[in-house]
Length: 155
Image 1 (tube, helix red, strand yellow):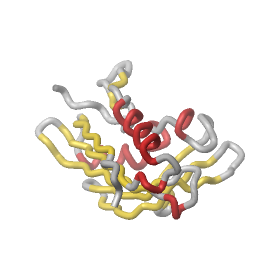
Image 2 (cartoon, one colour):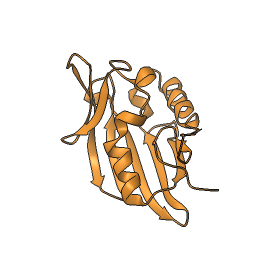
Image 3 (cartoon, helix red, strand yellow):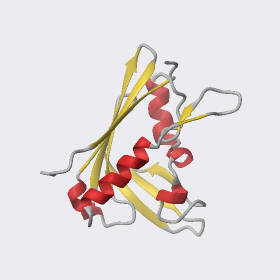
Image 4 (tube, one colour):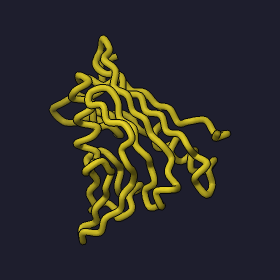
């Protein structure tokens, strides 16, 4: 049992749950900040491929970031998380997609910090990353959440 609490974040997006799930999973390479939080840098790509989250360098090198542990299109997704580390040093992420009156509530919970060399610092870094996910204005469209790429629901 971890002594550190999970990182938990919620955002309501202006999309149906089907769209929210699709954007989160199919477009991960468009919204994840590879420049600062990738193995191969900003020119790499990342995608869900055959039950894994895979980053590819421009030269074709591959780094598996995690393995899907739960895949319930429209409602939930779970995966281990170990970018740049061995799979036996994985934390775990669960994401749920729940319809609301104004769109879809996307809730993320990241647990298992004890696998990191410095659990408290790593948790704080991921917490700051999740907290820093502010709306991004887009020309010709609604503001979008920085980490999910999804339009934010009107408040």
